[in-house]
Length: 220
Image (tube, rainbow, N blue to C red):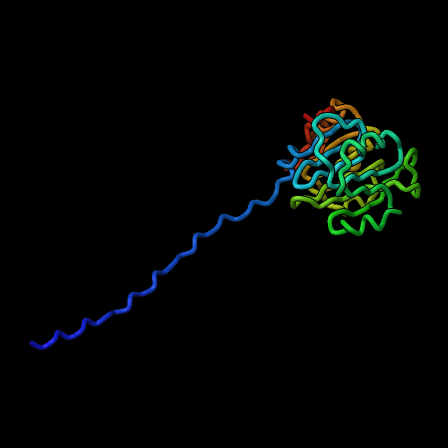
């Protein structure tokens, strides 16, 4: 009996894989970032995000995470103390206190920038005061230091602006200049800050601009 002809093998087409589209990554929201901010009092602010950044550490209290960066805007003793720095200083903390510390600044120059801070009374121009613009977690955070409004503020374009309130008119002048989405008003009482926020919202803030509702005190 003759052998049957061998079966013809038909190659099977490779299955077509359709990639699953990834949803776009949402841009970080400045308003959402407010939950990562804590106000201890005066100008002492903690940004508690992927990096722990303390601005003007004074009267620090509560469960304090070790600092990645400490930034001190000027030498007035209501903006820093050795005791408070020691509470959050770790072996890898970067401490920036003045423009003369340029070697330390170089290490984080892609993240931190110095800008002027001065007024005509207690923080005179040329006395070493400074503000900081920090880029972290996709946000630009501007801590103004001890300052009054000056025209260059309009160029900084932060997402979050942390501003001192020496007078209602003074802080509102800064808010009018700075196109931030979130304003944190410090160096005054919680109630004064919220009163300014109410006035500003009525007079000139856009619908997508807010004044953060931060109460000063210990970190929970």
